[in-house]
Image (tube, rainbow, N blue to C red; front, side, top):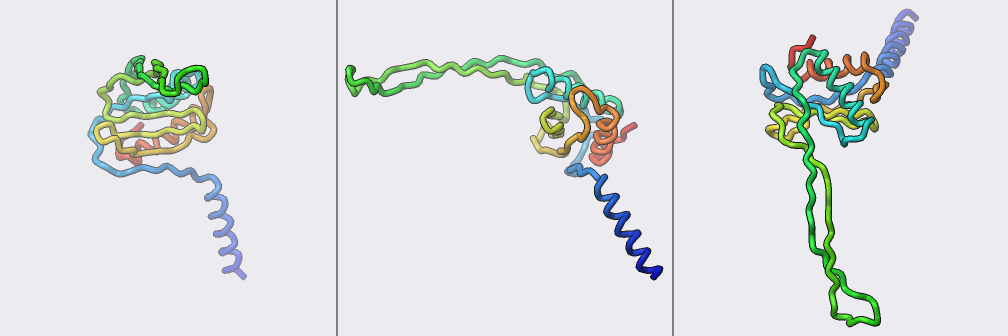
Length: 169
């Protein structure tokens, strides 16, 4: 009877502890002694930048070197595109030429050792080693968003940095 109670208590404990766990995936690689990080939002929308600022503050609070994010560069590419005429009044062999202009923004180069990409939708954070483009950590910040959840973010990010082998406060 006593053994049965101990088994049930152990089962209850394992179920309760399993519900509150969070998964952080970290790849173990050579980490420099004092690496620098830069936090890059998914785009320049206000909620994305605000969420990136929450993550950046958590990394700074952990005592890790963070450098300012690079500026954005507007890239404009013009392409010639041909389209066959389908109008019966014109010759079927004619090709109408169009110029298609694509505009997008890209980030300038950074001197950081690690790039931290943030995505406010899903509160996803991804650490990438810049020299190899290898994703070394990927996780969500449950309960955190662009406007709150700083304490929880601090804990989770500190844990991820610790698992990478960095000394954190």
